[in-house]
Image (tube, rainbow, N blue to C red; front, side, top):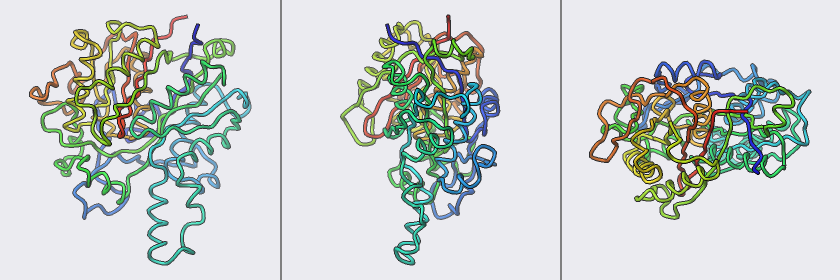
Length: 416
């Protein structure tokens, strides 16, 4: 018998809001968090829009002295963790430190710190780089700072699988709890890559949208025939996972269960998915088997749905391959149409979205879906432009990362 794993707390910082309530209201209203880049002068770039976190005040969640020693991706992760732990009724005072773990997904680390220090290095020499450059840029510092902030002394691990990192981190945390290595695990993903170097790096490989600089809120348009790339975004999503009996014993409120995880690699291409969708489809099948769920029991699939010409076509093929005829009966949507692509944080924020969708019986929309790309086979029910109400017992969330990484999560309505 596998140990059941409950979700007892959630927290987020992202382009739609700096807390769960604001974020979820944005999703329900079909609001876009995309706008002009304000973090730096983007006038020399082809891409001048992004999903920036707005009005973030780290001191609301983090001791100011500690925050000054953190890159943005770490600040976002610690802030989202503070929200999630408070939501779960946990704190530094009542956490069981040796039985609590951390598993955080991150793709790139402290880009803004790296960019500033590299600039000083080339302009002024090695003595001028920022003293905390290395401790701030490395990916594991989000997990390390969470541990220090909340007195967590179990494992503090980092998952790096590009855009699948957040989902894979949650899947690995599920396995940690099932294996008995911890009773509670703080897990999710975090990212902040909106810098000149970050945008230029993704722009040069033709991954980002360039056609909608004057209409940023319309730029992310998954499954639409006019899509031309994804929108770089930033933020964090954190979930508190807890062994079910442990949660029951302390009277915790249970949002849903994290019931299954499937992981595969395409072994095909650095940036392109398997053209047959085989790797992703196998990951879905493995996740459903892990959860003990039949394909026809799934009502909602939260798609990776990046708004790139290749991903949306191949992910649709992947979903059809995994779900068969049922793919035309369930609802599929991409909330990246509203948040943009949070890279390593994407899967975690989208898993959190599934939790709220199950709780409220609400299918989030794919906004900007004006003309489905039927020529590319994008012909499923993507919940175009306006969310709809309806019962959701089982939701699946999919993440696909550069390098061919496929991470799939199954979330299920909690029933005692």
